[in-house]
Length: 131
Image (spheres, rainbow, N blue to C red):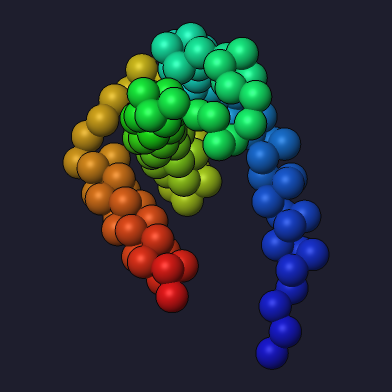
């Protein structure tokens, strides 16, 4: 049995196009949050080329800021992805509900379940990639 890949892609694109208003509504706040987080973290870390000329010259305090900035950014991105993904998957699987953007961007039981499962998958993938 062959998987109809092109039919699946076509259906996904058509569904996204038909729900473009909901997609834009659900995606706006997460994209805005990620943009603000990236700006603040980049401002805190500083412009890397102005601090060092080669990779060997990176001072330890800059490496620490880079590590923690990357970690904070990753956690924020997983958090806002969860908000968007749960709202969009519910819209796709259940159909258009009378859901507001504020309701979609509130963390509840569904979001926590999705968040835990997503973190579990990421941790498993991390350990699998080590081998």
